[in-house]
Amino acid sequence: MSATGPATLLGAAGPVGTSPATTGGAAARAAGPSSAKHELLRGLGADELVDYRTQDVAEAVREVDFVLDPVGGAGWSRSLRSLRPGGTLVSIEPPTDAFPLAEAEAAGVRAVFMLVEPDQQGLREISHLVGSGRLRVLVDTTLPLARAAEAHRLGELGRTTGKIVLSVVEE
Image (cartoon, rainbow, N blue to C red; front, side, top):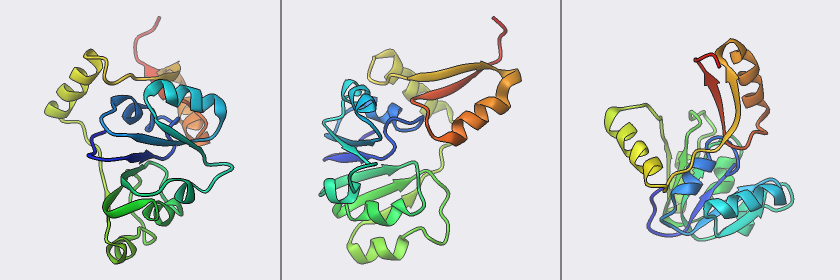
């Protein structure tokens, strides 16, 4: 994650959020579901934590430059309220008719969709971040490729902390 000022990571303890939370660089406010996950997020570098089950993140987090939202949907409009003028909401969920482009423009902020595709330069940078210790990859579960359907079901539950890895090499 690279931002000039405070940033918020929604779903910070999940498979997407744990990686940006480890890269640091800006004051990170993280939204996670429980005190156990909050300890993990503190260890990854989050400065402030919000329990999204008991708090309205948009009320608890104000005046940030950047919100990374891997969840999407109804959260998009709420996320806009956390941004300071000129801030940016980035969603990795494909935009739907509910994506708040007009609402963002009216509020003086940006709402953008980011499609992540592997490329050689990007993979080199990730490798450098991992090698330098600035990016930690948290693995929740490792399963053999033959159990890919189970891995998919685990991911759909939305309760993992870190990545679900499929191993293509038999152990």
